[in-house]
Image (cartoon, rainbow, N blue to C red; front, side):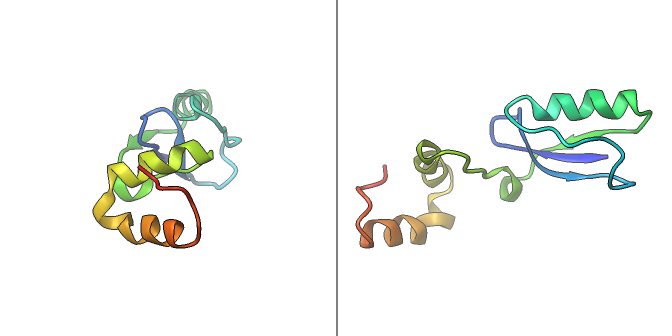
Length: 91
């Protein structure tokens, strides 16, 4: 099993496992640790990894400014589009 973490290092943004139903997926901030524990209980190997492209995760509106700050070069177009369509200035 391989899990890609969110930018906080606690959640899971991508999960690969064989078979696909080896464990039940977990959700929320502590899901990475929960996946690791479930894999161990199921006798499966587990590897957590961090990849910038997979770490971006927007679960709530207040997380959008953090995404735009973390990767302004990649998401500058998104900031401009939001502001063009009436969103208040995203900092």
